Length: 195
Image (cartoon, rainbow, N blue to C red; front, side, top):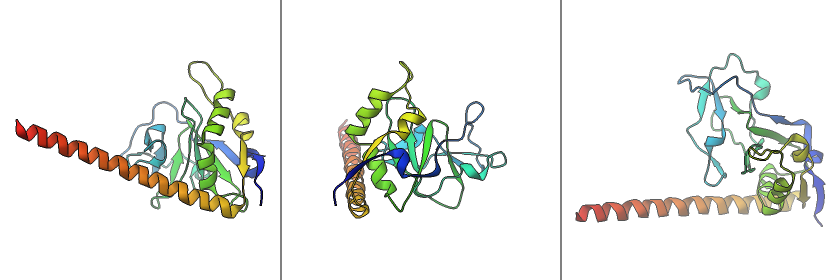
């Protein structure tokens, strides 16, 4: 089956594109807060993983419609690094995205969220964002530009295969980086022990 080109809007569910939760003022970490907040600082390993140092806030004021579900795609709409990552639940605590992120909910009968996030991160789509970004110093991608993002869509079976290979590749890169980091520590420690 040949791939087809669609725009992102056509593969979203009804009301499947929204901004993250907008806080009034700076987000303050509350030790026993009931809701986890994903911010830009939580993207790690070249925007391929979420770190485990997320802030927590009180759950009283946040409506459940903002809670993320496994398979939601988080897209960085502000700044120069407009990457996407698929949210996967860590535990039973509700999790929300901050307003620097867009939340995409795709129709899983049509597309694999991991494939879509991977495809958005490729240079062709990144170039599309660079061409269509708003602002001069503080750049951003607006909702319309994001909705019109061209997506090359192979069959769901091929999407799943690509997503699995891309995920394994990201895991390999993360392990390689960890090995390099540990080698650096070992070498530095050995050299300092000579003194």
